[in-house]
Length: 392
Image 1 (cartoon, rainbow, N blue to C red):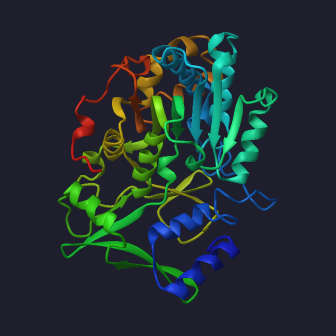
Image 2 (image 1 turned 90 degrees about the vertical axis):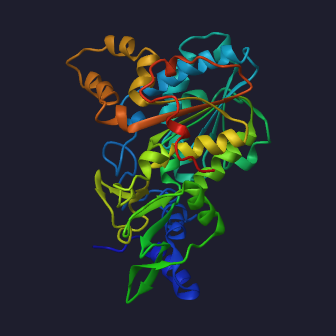
């Protein structure tokens, strides 16, 4: 089996040979986001297979059916009313993949040529040239209107407290590079990557950053020897930066993950790290480097805690099935032929033992008094779920 993209393998191995073993978080950053050769950054060529979609390595909710985008559009309308119908109402989506969710959301908004549609501005944060190209193709119908859809490469391009509206992401945080740690003889060590005899090997080293040690102290875990898990410090930094950009409005984070209490329970001894290649999952990241996706489940408790410290109140926490039901998915599905593939695809998003239950949705707000959102009408979790074993 191939180690992966030759130029990327050369970049990573050269860094290790030059500097010694690197923390896994650095390996994952290079594998996914190297500016030229990373999995998400590289332009497709004739030798590449599709990365995202039914025939790709993995698919997202927006690949399955348009109802998630339509539901977000409906929720955005309610948020707009709660904010007093600002001009503009800005929707910021970060990590928009191929732009399908943005396409579905904009289509639902502009299906009604009303005041809300005239005030919406849609900003996509995307640093990958390959993904930007997909997004422009799928959003072509809306690019003729000046200022309606714009692109920026990072959060730094948004001024502090410049967004009034909605900031949302779907399957973004799970793809942030993670620190991987292991408990050995009572010590918590960090998984690092070495390169020997033409292949990559794992090794354990002391924790690479004080921030990681401090985070673990706040978690205060009781893990047995051999326990392995992931810590996503980049997600915490990201949430803090998002909070700084919101003046008044909402943050909606959709991803697969857990509360900290569930994510770091002693029985989850192997962690949640996975690789995706042509719809198959594995846990070996040292092959197909730059040619397979890598992910880890999200710690929603820590995201909520960091957001609260930066001024974002928790509006609610739910799963995708409950979110869609609260926003009238039954009416949307009721318009479909129950024998059609489209009907089956829509139901796929709701299955409690599938995407409907696996995907969680964290909603936060600032500058709105006790908002009551339709997407949070049904609450599958206790109100204190995110408070357990928080870390910030």
